[in-house]
Length: 573
Image (cartoon, rainbow, N blue to C red; front, side, top):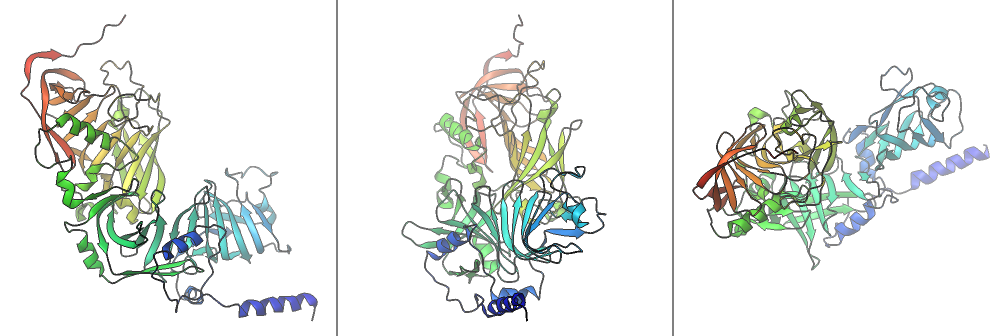
């Protein structure tokens, strides 16, 4: 027997005798520090999650967590096939050439199918192409066996994020170990579990708050764990609105984390039934939670806030200014999410956030129709408790509509907040007025979808000048431009429109509107043009009282008096 073969047998014996970590008889600690210890381990990209015996056995029985990484195309017949890659391995090459040994497969950021002299020509060398499941993949590292990726794997993406997990026959298998995703700084973004071994789908730390973790279950229930200053571990069941906004949070007393640190496994034992948990969020107790700031708005104290349901004439200017300041920050959830839109739950007729029979998102951009030759790229950002996803949209300049074909209409992330951002817009100007004075260059729309249309509260951050002659038609300003309610893509009820300079236009379309001056008290009540909202004529009035209805601040004015004033063009020298 050769010395090389003896070494190989010895290695096989040592491997077969190595004990598996097993979670079957783990004594789950009840200490509040266990979540922190577990998260510290899984957050380290240099830590390796060890397979358990049960997870390896499960791998042979099911396909849970099955996600394709790449496939080999020997004939290079697929239109997405790529031969422009590089493969480095520690294995000795033999004919016919196959992917073998511990190696790394690397792809250039730009497809180089026409470059036959560069370093990415291994497709020609090996006589086979690669079809990537995600064109954003930069490299795949792991153990290759006869063209198949098996075992621990690290995937790097061109956007500098990385993924660590377990592969079997070129597929990611969260059944064996959880799949961890790290951002460009090596910070853990989220961790995915397998349905075959855990009721927990993913766990995510809230970067903005110390000791707060979001746990998304497979039965669409969302939990949030919070470690108090005293070291107590509290658990809440909440309804997610977006990545950082939760509503109807209520405390749960009977829960137990089931954690095995070496395998990165996490499960959660809650004795209340799913039906009982979902009924809990409809009670009058509890609070709404802004994870971005840590603020909690308790339902019991809601009527005592500035956003009262009853008409009030106490300091209306101050209340109006505070409310507008709250809704004008695109980076922080405004307070209106505490009030339910009467038609906020998508009906069965509309098939939920995305219409599965017609999975298309369409958003009207009337502001761009007023801009001379708009040169824009439109991107939809899907914000949910699981993270942020980006999708490029097609902009129809003639119709002034941005559209997107949705490939995953069943994804629960569509239930969350969306941001439609305009990129490379023309002549972006900085704002310096009172309303919308937050330091943000965001230009776009924030809202939610129903049937692929805007639905519920919608914020628009696309300011243009109300210039009837079009002299300033190419200028776009950041800052809140519109806030109101939408019902399946159509604006309803009274709305607010902010103007460059700090003024506000308030009212319902088709009726007389009011222009409120920056002092938040003086107003001109009268007629405005429909197309651009330009003032025509009106009389002076004052803000008398206000109230909040479904998150929209409604205003009553004093009786208009005095002579009519009319719009007149400025003199041009």
